[in-house]
Image (cartoon, rainbow, N blue to C red; front, side, top):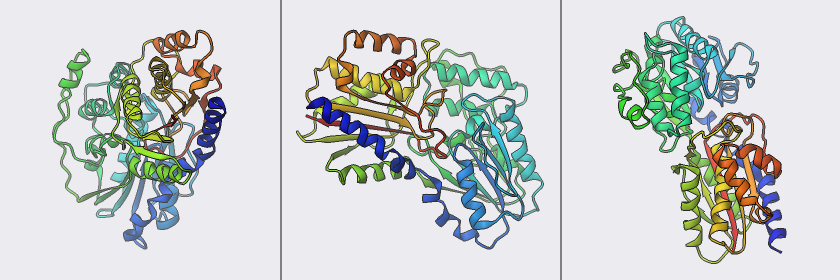
Length: 407
C-alpha cells in the first residue's frame, strides 16, 4: 500500500508542475505595475532568465517606440518586433556576457535626455551582463565566480564579490542613463535584497567589501581596486513585483485543495542540501499525525566535489532519502525539488522527484552516497527515472521543494 500511495503522490506532484510554474510567471504579476507608463514614451530593457516573458508583457502593454534591448540565457532568446534580442552565458560569464552589458549601456546612452526607462530584471542577470572593473580581465572575473560556486558560496556571498569587481553591477548601469530608471523585478534570492538580485545593476551600492567572503573561502583577493560607491544623477525607483512567497502561496493553495496539511517554511531556506534535508525531516517529524506537506523556497548551495553531473536540488532529494532511511521514517515519503528556471546546477535538468520505496533495493544507500561524493546526483537519478526536465520555463523564482508524508 505504501508504494502505491507514494507512486500516486509522485504522479500528483508531476501533474501539478505546470500549475506551480504558472504561479511564477511575470505575466501573472507585471502588467498592473506598468499602468503608470501607459501611453508614455519609454525605453525598455529586460535582463535575466525571465527577460523574454517580461519584455513580451511590456511591449504588448507599452509598445516600443524607442526600441529596446533584451538579454536572455543563451538558447532562450525570443524574437520580439522592435527589440534587440541577445543571448548571454549562465552561470559563468563569457564574452557574450560582456557584449550584453556593453549593449545595454550603449542603448541607455543613446536614448533622449530625460526619457524614462522601464528596466525588467530577473535572476541570472549577474552572469548574463558582466563588465569587470578596470584591470580585471573577463577570464579572471569568470574564474573568481567559478571558485566561489564550486566551494559552496551562497548567493549573498557570491554577489557581494561580483558587485565589488563590476562596472555594471551595484548600480553601475545607472551611470549610463539619460533619464529616470524604473526597475520592475522578479526576485530569486532569499530575503529579496535588491543589492543581491542580479547583483543590483539598478541599485546603487555603498561600496562592497569582498574581502571577508574571499578570506572565508581562502581565495586570494584580485590585484585590482574594488568599485567604490555608485552615484546616479537621475531618479531611480525599484519595485519587486513577485517573490518566491507568491509561488509558495499558490502551491500551498493547490495542496490544501487536495487535503494536505501544510507546513510552509517560507522562501529564506539556505544551507547545504544535507543540512537542509536533516532540518526539514526534524520539522516533519514534529508535525501532527496526518498527511503532511512541507514546502520551502530559498536556495541550497552545494560544493563541487567531483566531475559528475548534478545540482543542489537533486542532491537535496537524495539527502532526504538517505536521512529518512537512517531514521527508519515510518509511512510513505515523496520528495520533490526543482529550480523554477528549469536548470538545477549546470545542465538542463530542473530537479527530481523520488519516493522512499524506490530506495529499498540492495546497495542503494552506498550508490547514493558515492554519487553525492562525486557531485554526480544527476546520473544516479537519471538511472532511477527520477529526474525532472521542464525545458526553459521563462521564469525564475528560485527553488521549490515539497515533501509529502503519510505517517
